Image (cartoon, rainbow, N blue to C red; front, side):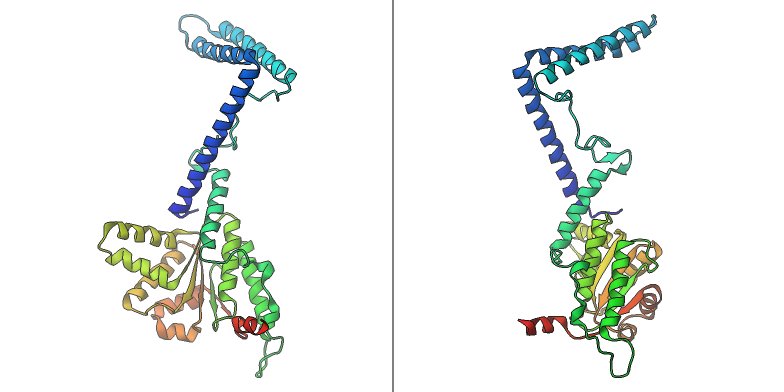
Length: 334
């Protein structure tokens, strides 16, 4: 999973801080026990010396170290028994002097070999959701709060499904997409329709759910995304160019990219090229994308190149939102 470097950095810092806090707590506990039970300090010292003796005996040349190792192990077990008895008699847990990591799987390092441990993975998920919350109101936006009552139950004049029926189907697709990610039958979604019909809301619901399930998610507007592509290519300042390159890598490599409000950007030749690169690179790598736009598919064909339009229509499941502007309906309720 390709987490944003900033997300990984903050999660790693939190893990290091947690490790320092655990070590400080252990030092305080040990000092407290040594002050109350001076004999415990003596037993701990003897235990360390016997362990060093076991290692030395195992490395000794010329003689069989097995008898010495066995004797030292026996002494070590007796010292452990005495320490346990001393601690329990004083009302402490038998392992009160043991240094225990929060995560025994990785020892609080965050990694098991070359694989990220679940403890660091969880911190990355939390940091990612916090990052998304800067752009989206994730406190309110969830599938549980989506309200179909704002969509008319009446069919259109020409017949067919009512806006409510259509939106119920779209809602179910979006929820299944998020809850089964990345295994849903549709890899990519294209949410299209007039403003104020819930496209951004459902995009936020998808972002939240997929993030909470531990996948890397990047949410951004079309304007911001293509601005970063331009900065990567044309920035004169080296640091600005490197920052833009890091951002565009996020867009290309995350597990799920949510591109909001396609069509709000300037339709320049550079933007056309950047959009094609973004869509095609993610399709080739089988990385999932959700795009929302106020443009119809017909307008997509007129605004963008045939290569872009054909990929959006052929590789994305198009979900057409219908109804009245929910923002205006809410305003009328006040």
